Length: 122
Length: 80
Image 1 (cartoon, rainbow over the protein chains, first blue to last red):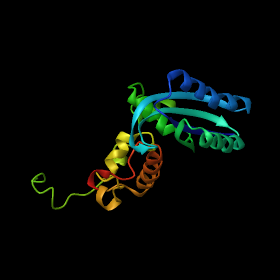
Image 2 (cartoon, chains in turn blue, orange):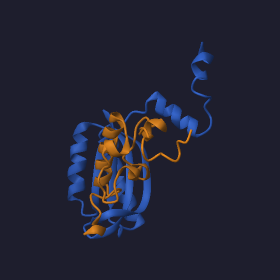
Image 3 (cartoon, one colour):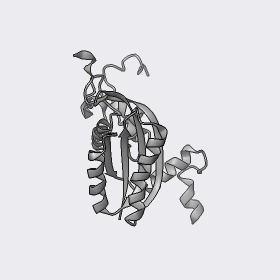
Image 4 (cartoon, each protein chain N blue to C red):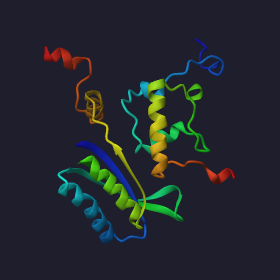
């Protein structure tokens, strides 16, 4: 199973409870199909760069998950049929490389200068 | 050196992403990506921005994905 990132833009008119239901409807099948939901990010209501179906805003949900490939196709089909979904996109997630992890650590101000770490290991 | 005054004439371009040591540019990072599109929403070519090949191809892919998610515009209709 591969690691995917799915972003879904819901109609801004949907209430919070409805959004929660929708998120459930995305995550449940993943677990059922033997996948794994790694992270659910709620970006909230954002302004769209261009109007989609005459909407100026959208409620963004971002899900990181491990799923079987067959489920991705099924998910895509369901999003298309779902009137509340303005837009959706599923892409393969990039595995974090050691250097990227190091950069993130550096941004937190934790890691030592890059050149020193290998020498310390010797 | 009187470098600053004549910066318009000969100034070596460099890849800003390499300078920042960006490993991978993310399609979700619309603020960073917006530096690489024109005010009409076009992707800035390498010859203008000075981006290296590796980062330019990452930018291209990321911008296209961000456009699908309406994080970036396909075009700006202000000029129409």
